[in-house]
Length: 183
Image (cartoon, rainbow, N blue to C red; front, side, top):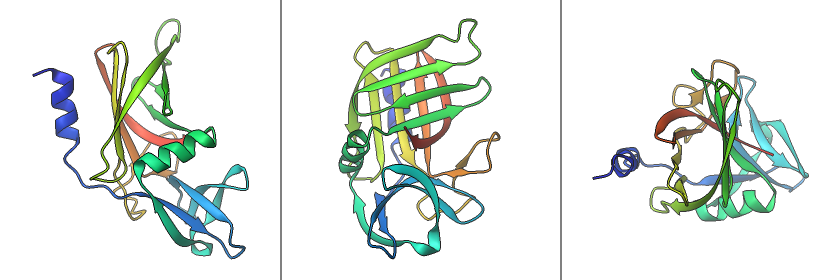
């Protein structure tokens, strides 16, 4: 069995819930972008911008399926942005492409891939992607369902907590990191 298939099978075992939509006292829809901080603020998309809003001012009104959530992100020109350290790297993933860059390569070269996505609707917010040329494989999954810091993904470069993690293989090299949603 191919090593990448084994990795996907191993990583696809956990149960994850769907992405949430909130509203505030003004009845505006607010999309949670999977990041929060020690001040009990959630990173959200609200009024055509990304901002942090106090969680106690929001009320849960809906949950998107993974497929719906990816479509909403694409329509808003938002992407999953994964990053990790040692070496420092970044990947931007939307419904159609992924752009990977390792900042420790001699030329800091960016790799752009056309991707196919595979959504695991039974387990909630988790999806896999691969490039058409098979040089990129990845999985993004939700690891923190209730904004509990001990369950969240965190990076040493920030004080924020992320509800998504990523495993990605680029040109046969594996990377693990946290995922935020951004422009």
